Length: 84
Image (cartoon, rainbow, N blue to C red):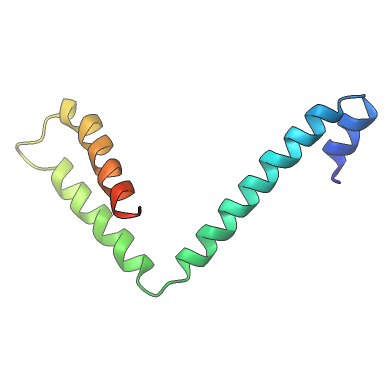
């Protein structure tokens, strides 16, 4: 139990201490997943290529600033679909 949890329990807020524990554990687990994924030898190449393609599209003569937000949403949706 860390200092924040101890303080919450001491203040009689065991419910908040438990919620805090759940959230911090979830955040730590997500960080572990990313560390493992980022260790893959292709990770840097993939992310650099995605960034390059995105910047090229954003900087294109046909791209309007109003297109960026909805396009970003669609790109993220496509990536999520690939990862299912």
